[in-house]
Image 1: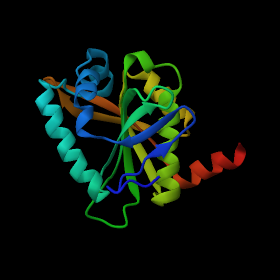
Image 2: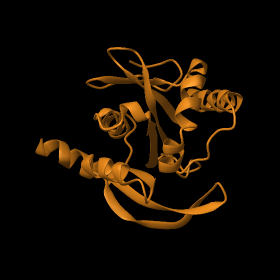
Image 3: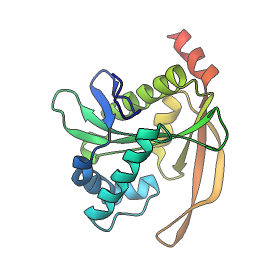
Image 4: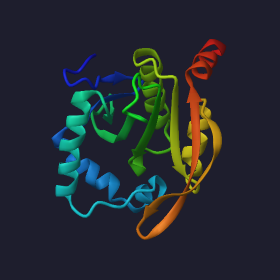
Length: 192
């Protein structure tokens, strides 16, 4: 289903991804202020809910342009918020946008149940089929072993370490870089 904003709603088996909305501020604040989420995601915890509301307004402008796609991950049965996922082009000044990046975070209570794998697959399918992306990469803090495994299960290949990629809470963090190409994605689909 296409959303008028340019950021479509995506469906998966047990979840759906819908464009982020102003009403998601409380859920996003709870998610991103969680110590485990901020540590594993390599992000600074938000100071207050107003900062989240400002971020959502900015994401909506980007969603409208198709320049940056930000979704909430929702449970189909309960309509409840599970997390968020995003897809955005790298080198946005060069078109067509052939290389994109993916990022995500999930509520602690939803982890380990396969929801994020479904969300990543839905975004990969959309990126490679609808946007004709050639490559999607992910940057993951080295300590986030679960995310590294999730990406590998979804066809991503490890490409190396980016030393001092982030400066969060006064500390430099190394990030592992993984990526999947369009050719590899469709090759994996043929094997199923």
